[in-house]
Length: 200
Image (cartoon, rainbow, N blue to C red; front, top):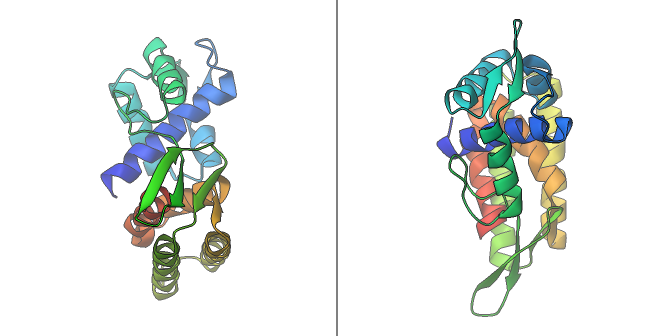
């Protein structure tokens, strides 16, 4: 799995703990329930929890896979949201970017957390091309279950339509990232797509 993809999923897991418990150090979570809500399998959940625990961002709370946030974990999430354009100690910037054509290139401004704006024609065509590449990879992978393939393709087609209209929703891209974390044959392609949506 791509390193940046790992960081993205780790942060999503940590952020979910924070959001679900309102940032409380007293909130207790079942690590498997949290991971399953993010669409992760047992192995991915275990790897994420091992990493976050090793970095002191979460800690075990009793038996059976219960965990809670640490003070450092709360600080990490709050720093990421307070300064979304900056990296934290453990994670890349979490901001979503508006990209507008300026004639000579792209002007990049920090955007809101709901929409990516991709109005440069070249950027849009690259996003569409990469999304179609992922669709082809899904169709060529015999190990992907039919329901998962259909869900992924539907989302990718939705992303293509949004991109061609000039606005790609964060929700659509988040769902595609989650699917990419569960289907190894498209994981790196999905990260490339995410980077195109955010940075081209």
